[in-house]
Length: 305
Image (cartoon, rainbow, N blue to C red; front, side, top):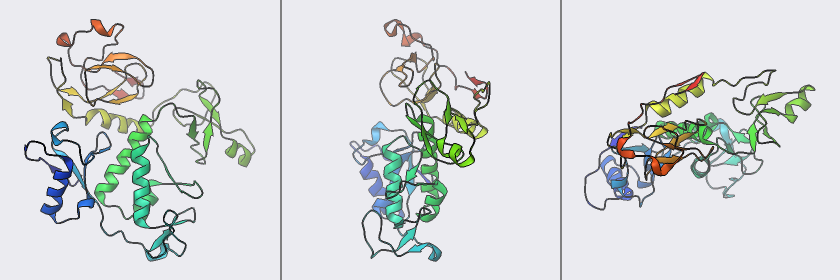
């Protein structure tokens, strides 16, 4: 993020007030300033009280004038607005869109759902983030935030009934929720031999297959854990609890937002203490006053602890 801002302690201050202050201070348009939390992948809404969020506030500055490279210009109307008055560009799938519409579509898609990809409205082709960053003429702030948001969405995606083939990009469905080896019918049809991959790690399926995290995935998870802000939690004598944890049961990524430290994992339904990471058989018998804060979890290819 290009800016980190510590607002005044004025009572009743809201995010909209901070955005107005920053827009005036730095001479930029109000819509181009966003108050965000990179670690959680959040863009704070205007009415959110400043007192409720972590300080300092991270800020992104957007591009007020998104340009189009001459070789990317298109003559077809914008796929969303049907407008032909604004300059449009051609996406890799062949359909046209203005840079502002492209950025808005990407932002709405990634912020409203835990999904990794952005698709064409017309043909449903998926666009890479590299293509979107270039063609939406995104600023460095926008690029950093939304690339990290894609990573968070990828790590937090749960209970999906389809998974992207790592070889061709087609989404494949599985019939059995416990099945790990998935056959890609598109690749199988094209290569005329059975092509299967692992549901979890996306590597080619082999006999006696064992999942291992890729180096990139491990780096993302370690960053998620190591860069998590410390926060005070109610009923915990030992303060400064890491705000990001992995479920001790299944490894699902969890961000602590509010309420107490007893946590139920959304994925495996395990109850555990977010502070000490103790698995809770009876939540009512866990005493937060005697809780010892567990250190930041360590993640490796062999697992996590």
